[in-house]
Amino acid sequence: MRPTIGPIGSHLLALGATLAVLSSSCGSSADDASHSASDRIAPSTLPETTVPPETTVTTTVTTTVPPETTVTTTVPPETTVTTTAPPETTVTTTAPETCAVASSTTTQTVKIGFTYPDLAAFAILNKAFGIGDPAQQAEAVLDRWRRECMLPDGLEIDLVFGKYNIISDNAKRGVCTSLAQDEEVFAVVGGRDFTVGAECLATRFDIPVIDTNSAPPSLYQRGAPWFFTLRADQASQLRSFAHWATTEGHLENKTIGLYYETRLDEAVPVLRDDLASFGHEVASEISTSGEGVGAPEDQIAVQRFIAAGVDLVIPIVGGSSSVNVFSFSESQGYRPTYIDLDYGEHTTDVAAKTMPAEQYDGTFAMTMTRAGEVAANGTPTPEAEECLNNYERYSGIEISRERAETGEYSNILLTCDLMSILLAGLTTAAEDLSKESFVTGIETSSDFIFAGSGSGSFGPSDHSGVDEYRTIQWDAECPCWVAVGGWKPIVRD
Image: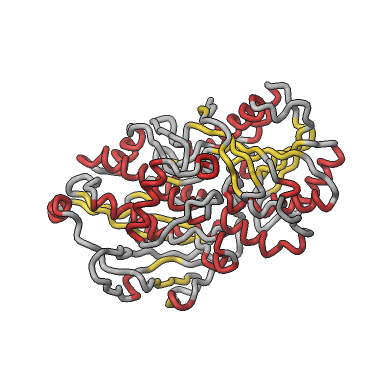
């Protein structure tokens, strides 16, 4: 068992980092959005040639990137543009001869936006919170497509990058506007917790976007036909959670407490109704906006659960609120059972490590990801290994395959999954490429076997990808999630 995490007040710094890294609790802040994007030059086997600093422009909002790799230039007052020139950046190699022929006859270049959270400051506090270099991770995938002739003949991709403050909705909307109006991108791949920016792209600018997180069912309708997500929609996720919790026996003879964020207002009634259909009523329920680091309702939720005799808690809130709840519960001598799910990235090892072991050890969770794969089987899946090997070849960075997965490990796999959807849409639509044919290409593509998630598919009436889930259990001694069950189908309408 891990040592007890102390009173809430002593954890404010850790809570901030947790939220900023992996939480879906992404409230608005007063920070103005800023964004810029540029082509990045890929590493090669040729002698290294340093690219001048002005060749790469990425966005920074409120997080300061280490000074030795950043030159900051002030543009309009509300925007900060950061020019990054990593020392290791080198000139791209020439593709293999068979692909070089195709590239020499390029007939169309497609500009693709790639967005990701700026977490540099938090990685300085704790390396485990870092997710590596998402732009380089995307470039590694594109490099493989070029090397192995996976791009359609005559098609070239120009990647444009946008960073955002993960807890600022304004920053995400700013990235949306910049990609749409300044860069005029064809489509966008969205990183963790970019939902607000993805909604902006799909609903305001009619730009196809492949986002990461589960979204409310109505967003798929408002964003149609442009809005896609890697993970299943929120209603399907919570319906599956009700079935999982019931069939696994977690709710038997339990008094249930539910703490959730209001951004789940569309999906929570589905969870509540499905639990009731199985004969389980929620005894105590409280919601929170999920804005900022932690919430005033965190301690109130615990007090209500204690008063109602709750002995099983479902915490569908961001990482900082979860840690608050667990820590305050421990201070009150209150130790209920918890069952969890992917919301707030709780099912990553990085996030779960911040939970007090006395409260969280042994917790079962339902996940749509491949968390716990290495801990259970000793090695990644072939798809994950292929993804990791490609990144190592491209970057020259060795990625650990230890039982406890790092943020960088999981983000590399996530990038491979998102990019695979992009390639499927481009490949299917290549002969007559347009935004409409790209959407149809994703909808009609074959089933996906993802590197970091359960298998999935899309269709004209289903723009959320992952189609299966499984059980994992938290082992605080490891500390890591361990896969303990087989895959089962997501329960949809």
